[in-house]
Image (cartoon, rainbow, N blue to C red):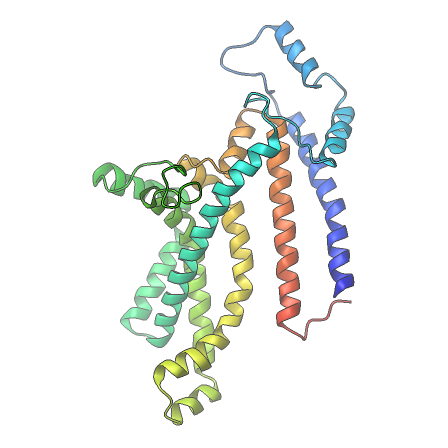
Length: 316
């Protein structure tokens, strides 16, 4: 196991190098530049800016300088944010994106697993059909469509919730969790798809467990229904659910681009979109490498968890 973990960690080096190279080349070959705006700058001003930020050097030299600085923990500066270090910007957005993903994961886990259990216990009944209907709706509607739908009714028509915002200073837990009214709609939008997925997986897993002989034996012995449900059914049905929670958590953090942009949430997803629109080279490279590293580490953690949970898996 230790050899496998060491090999996987070493594989991160060429993976990150390849991703940085491809991103760097594509970024510099896209039409436009960081100084393009509605008001065109004089040529001598653009030359001075390029000289100041090293953009007048050959492309290979710029990439070598970037890699050399990145290895020392310096991802450069943001052109569009008053030369602020990219690392500081990413750390600020990480707290917002992480908290949004954590809240969505909590909602998806509670609602999705509960719906799946109720559907399995009431197979082919009204609750089962309602659960399947909600899961189908949740998996069919894109997050931006659901977001617009919620904004129209809850904000514009009924004035129940604010349209946008993520004010951590006046939050439910100041500095970490925004006011609940601001969090409701983005969390629902982000959690809709994983909730539907968890409900389907939980229903299928519970139905499989409920058919097992040991569950029928437990019922025949006269054990209370709650004991049979929790001790003999739910705990065994939980294994496939736990294995998919890791990938779901990764998708929630890396898939928050549209939700953050729609509700003006200052997370890393919104930063990434803004950096592309503004040709902010330093921020584009920083956010891309951040998400690539996060996905690689999450996949490594999931693979290790598989090996620890299932002893039949052997890594040599």
